[in-house]
Length: 84
Figure 1 (cartoon, rainbow, N blue to C red):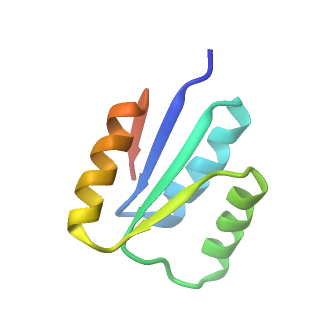
Figure 2: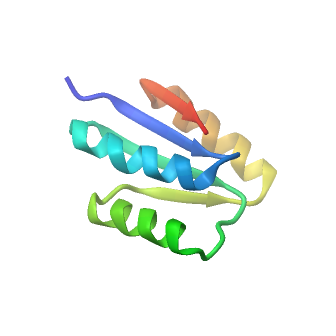
Figure 3: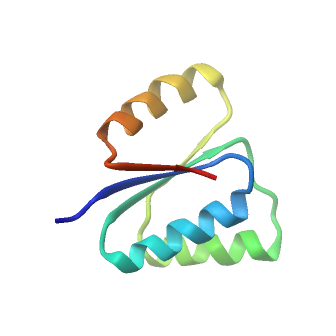
C-alpha cells in the first residue's frame, strides 16, 4: 500500500529536499512544500535535480494566507507529514 507523504521544508531546507528525494525510493507518493525561498547553492540545485528526476511535485510558499489554506489541505490528505 502506497503512502501519501508530505515533506515541509522550513528550517533545514536542503535536508528536507534530501529526505524527500530519498523517500521516492520507497515507491510512495511524495510531495514537497517549501516555506520561504531557496538559495541558489550547489547542494540545493543537486537536490532539486534529484526531485525533478523522481517527478516529485513541489510548491513554494511566501504568503501566509496561501500557506495556511494549502498546507492544511495537503496535511489532511497526507498519511505522513515531515517538517524539517
